[in-house]
Image 1 (cartoon, rainbow, N blue to C red):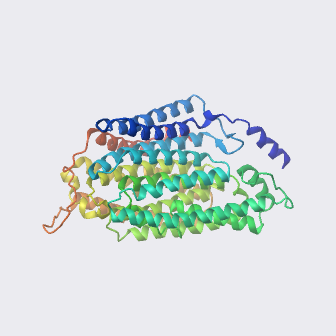
Image 2: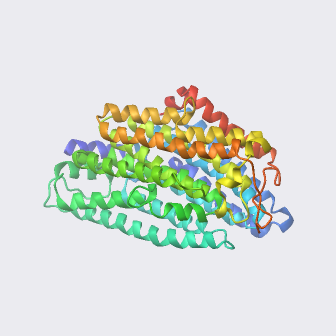
Image 3: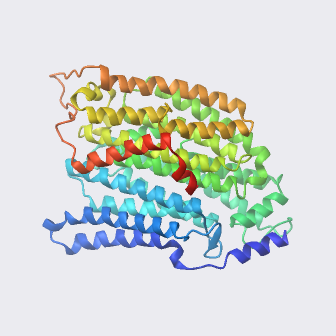
Amino acid sequence: MNNQLANYYEMAQDNTWLSILPEISLGVLALLLLVLELVLPKKRHDLIPRLALWGQAIILVVGIGHSSMGGAVSDLTSFNGLLIHSMRGEVLRFFFLLCSLLVCHMGIQYADRRGLPKVEFFHLILIVTAGLMLLAQSHNFVLLFVALETVTVGFYILVAYSRKSSFSLEAGLKYLILGAFSSSLLLFGIVLLYGAGGNPQLPGSSGDPMNFALLKVFIAANPDNILVLAGTVLVLCGLAFKIGAVPFQIWIPDVYQGAPTPVTAFLAVASKAGGFIVLINLAQGPFAPLKEMLVPFLGAIAILTILFGNLGALSQRNVKRLMGLSGIAHAGYLLLGVVASFTVPWAANAVVFYLFTYLLASFAVFGIMNQLAPMEDGNLSLDDFKNLARENPFYGAVLAIGLGSLAGIPPLAGFIGKLLIFIAAFKAGLYGILGVAVLGVVISIYYYFGWIMEAYFKPRLVSIKSEETPYGPDQFPATSSHRIVLGCLTAGTLILGFYQGALSYLL
C-alpha cells in the first residue's frame, strides 16, 4: 500500500496551467462574448456568433494538434491529483468541443426564428462545455462535484431559455427540482465515502480520501464497510439521474420536449456522455474493488433501462419525447459497456466509440428537427415529417441514415458501436443482459423505421383548421453551412460504419 501511495505522489507533480489551456480558452471566449455585446454597436452584433463558432473551431484544431504532437501524457495527474490527463481525456475534449460547435450552429438558426438573444446562449454553452471537459478529467470528488454542478446549473438556464414557451419554462422547473434532488444524493454519497476514508482507525485511510487513487486503496482494504457501500450506491444514484437510467429517468421525456431543440440535442449527447465518462472513471478507479457488488447492481439497472426506454418509445408520436425515451434505451446499452469494463478493460473504449456514433446520428436527426420545428417546437410530431423525402430528398436521406444508425442497422456506425459493446459483454460473461439488449435493438427498429416510413411513404395532410402548421422543408430553406454540417454528420456515420481505424487508434 505504501508503494502505491508513493507512486501516486510521484505522478502528482505537474501543476502547470497549460494542462487546462482549452478549458481556460473557452472561459476567456465566453467572457469576451459578453464584453463585445457591451462595446460593439447593435448593427455589428452579428459578428459575435461568428466569433463564438470560429473561436471554438480554433480551440478544437489547436487541441488536436497538441494531442497529435504528444501533448497528452498517459495518466499524468496535475493540480495535486485533481485532474488526470490521458489520451482518452484528449479524445473527450474533442468530443465535447464538437458537441458545442454543433449546438451553437443549431442555436443561431433557432434563436433567429424566435427572436431570442444569442450571446447569452453561446456564453452558457461555452461554460457548460468547459465544465464537461473538466468533468471527464476529474480525479477527485471535489473537482467532480464542482464541475458537475457547473454543468447542471448551466443546463437549468438553457432548458428554460425559450422564455415565451410554457413548455420550456415547465421543463426548466422540473429539471431544477429533480436535478437538485440528484445532486443531494451524489453529495451525500461523497460525504459518506469521505467520512469512511478519513477514519484513521480503518486500514488504508489517507489524508485525502476524496482522491480517486487514494480512495481506491482504502476501498480495497475495506470492501465490506457499510459506509463505503452506502456511499457508493448514493454516488451511482446521483449519476444515474445524469445519464437517464432507471429509476431516475422520469424527467427525460418532459424536459426533452420542453427544452429548445439545440439544448435537447446538447442534453441528449453531451450531458449523457459526461455522466458515462465519470462512471467509467469510477468503475476503473476507486470502485473497481467493489466489482462483485456493482456488476449485478448496475446490470439490473441496465436491463430495466433498456426495457423501459424501448417499450416507452413504441407508442410515442411526439418526436422530442421519442428521442428522449430512445435515449434512455441507449443509456442502457452504454451502461452494459460500463458493466463489461469491470472484466474487459477495452469495453471502456467501446463506450467512447459508441458515444461518437451516437453524436453523429443524434445531431443529424436533431438538425432536421430544428429545421422543421414550428415556433412551439415542443409540439413537433411524426405527422410533421410526412412526405419529407419527396419534398426534400436531402433531408429525407439525412434523417433515414441518422435513424438507421440509432437503430443499429449495418453498415452504419451505430451498428459497429452496438456490436463492440455486445462483444465486450459476451467476453465478460454478461449473457442475460446481452440477451435483453439484443431484444431492445429489435424493438427499437419498429419505432425508428416507423419514423422513416412517415418521411418516405405517408402523404402530408394539413388541416385548414390548424392554428399553427408545421414549417415545411422549404419554408425556411437551409443555408449552405447547414447543409454542409448535415452532410458531414451523415458522411461520418457512413465512414465510421466501414472504417473505424482512425478513432480506434486514438482510443
